[in-house]
Image (tube, rainbow, N blue to C red; front, side, top):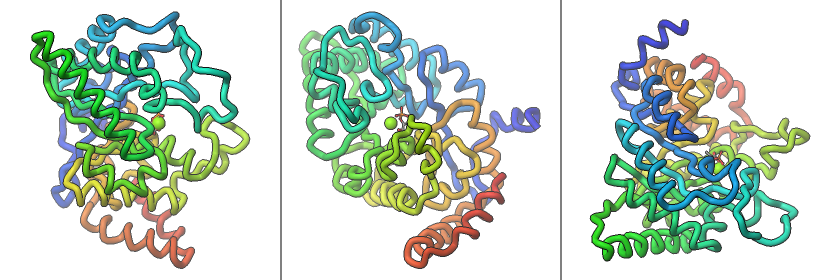
Length: 326
Ligand code: PEP
Ligand code: MG
């Protein structure tokens, strides 16, 4: 089985009816770039930069970050989407300074883009390092936990001001596209508004499911409620894909759901054509893409979801659709 999958490595992720799908890898450390290409990734859809900040004392300097980003951007053939710091909640660090008392609900607190907009020196250091490294490859910059348009615009303005600062120092600086993660239900519902300013979206289902269903993703007592197939979750995924398509921007998905081959046909049917996942899932998902007829799935899945929502039926058909892909 593994051998057959390996043969798929250099084949395109193209459906039976000729629609090209893009399969990218999620990575956490610069060294992971090699594993991604060994598994046939066309690029990196999510580089989680916070791992550079974890398990150490203090924060990495601008130069240290520049080295890491340059290394990873040069190592990746194809596009690389780098996510700005997603610290807080389940990813705490020794920041060297205090951000106040431990909150009762860290997942709803000062994390990710919120923390970066509050601690702007930390954010600007990272952004300068990213911008300096951008010319080594095809970098895109992605902002996590966006919940409203103002936050996106404020972060984009800071990035622009860092670019201007570097330009004045005589450095020629690339202008990487800036996109938003859609992982807060409010952002999915208001996706068309954010799409007017963002150059791309990436759906983070891990958090989107947590916030939509009001269940802590790291609390074992409620994980039986963690359901990627909840019609409300699927609605938000569909809304985001449609808003992106209407605005003419790319929409990817980088949560765990994107790397689970049981959900591939469902996601193709919802209109998704860009997936990013753990590198070891790439070949399985590619196999499903290559065996699917996306046109058929698109006409089936959207109607099925409407029926599930309005008539509370169709769950068995969804089940059949999912098992056909395994
Ligand atoms: C997500 O929320 O789906 C995601 C990809 O980000 P993380 O798992 O790092 O929160
Ligand atoms: Mg997330």
